[in-house]
Image (cartoon, rainbow, N blue to C red):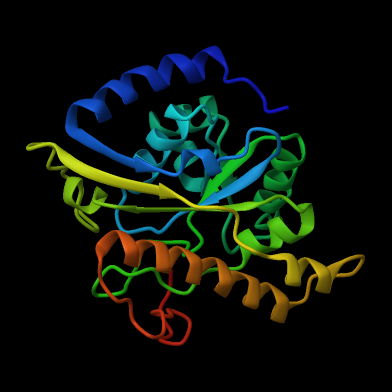
Length: 241
């Protein structure tokens, strides 16, 4: 059974809910796909720094206690750090000997029946037309190690509230935020490959590509547009995240 939100969590979430209700219009669909009887990973595309808020708004309003994996440096910030700790978020120590701690903590959260939310791209998309990029393999690793479902949650519209890389929001007029949750990504063939064995790099990459292809297809349906044939890949271009 999922852990109930703490009093701090509930008290902090209420004003944020009220704020988001005042500056956005909800175009939400697919809440029936959010599991209530098991831990799971909600994955979403990442266009703007407002995405975690709009995604959390959707998930929390549908009865989910939301935990993100966030950069460790944010946890030492004066105000944001206290909020992240109070909300029981998970620090990610990128490029250090502690990098695996986030995955281990994520697995612990999932195995106790709670959910975590992740942006598999690992950073804001660099695609010039804001399509999802190639993803990192952390989501696939946790999903295959724990057996929990991966729920794709595509969203569109938060970039009108806060532009990509911008720091000043544009709350008025109210922006319509479309959020669509889909059924679990089919990872059965990848689970079969690793049953009783170690997860290899090839399997992780294939599972990750499946997750990102699902998200991209959902974003394309929301936008009514055709995505690129191949996703933007920062690794291939030698860019740092």
